[in-house]
Image (cartoon, rainbow, N blue to C red; front, top):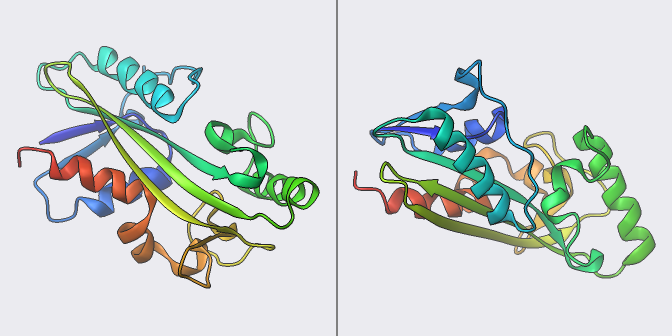
Length: 197
């Protein structure tokens, strides 16, 4: 079974591939198509953006047996009123690097909510099957925002996020922990469990 994933993010793609090891599934991505350009993410929710990406990619592929998946995910910080939320990847600007986003997050928390560091990662997956039916799968990982960056694995806000019940950041806990507990893995596992394998 081929599943096309509407992402150009190599880190996310690797996480998906790690999660389907041993399954009779071949993951393909938009990077394999020279002619595809990702649509602008104009939605107001994670699912809105995931659906925009999945629908655009589905129409472009035009496969009779096409299975298309797209996800949108991000960090929701309670003390910042839910920010960065759907703007997580571009919190510090349209082409911001992870280091810039993390620096802005620490600065804003220090200014607005130094004592409330509750946060969660959220993932919404939009899946479109061969018949065009749309389904959503979600996952969430609760935790706290650390006061400084630690760890060298992962990406995005992983060096600042300490999952509930842990003392280390996601960037310290590593890929094995993320593949088992992350917001993305929880959503993806629900999706896999729903497939007629």
